[in-house]
Length: 175
Image 1 (tube, rainbow, N blue to C red):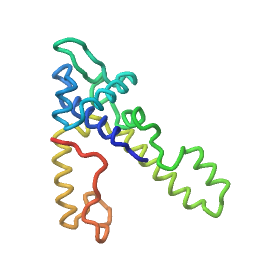
Image 2: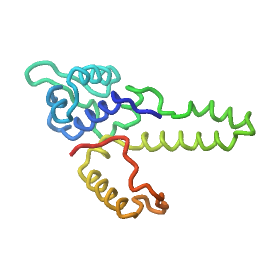
Image 3: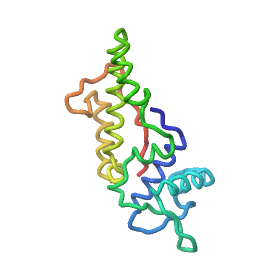
């Protein structure tokens, strides 16, 4: 799965809207400034998210954009699918299952691809805007980075990878 720059901008904007969910509509300019995003590009992204019914807009002096649902009901997978299309990094699951059953010499490889595809989809489908917009997550992410730099795995039961202090995250959440 590849998340485009447009997809990252969409996620950043949605996370910002989640953090300010109770504040009412927020102007594009405010989102762009707070998140450091290009305003014109953000306008196009927000229109796509509006057409997908993830955000709504209000016109006028007190207008702007806001989430259509509470942050705990909007999953990262929804945002990514709207902007970048399917989540599958190696094709759809049905195609991979077909390859597993028909290509015996590469069956093990296709099984790994299917597992990666399913894991990515499951994680993004179960992570909400509320999960990534909360200050507690940012704090735990900082602690995770500190543990990794000390050679301790941030994931219980996971073995440290030699020579790799930290794997960069896909999405950076700004506090």
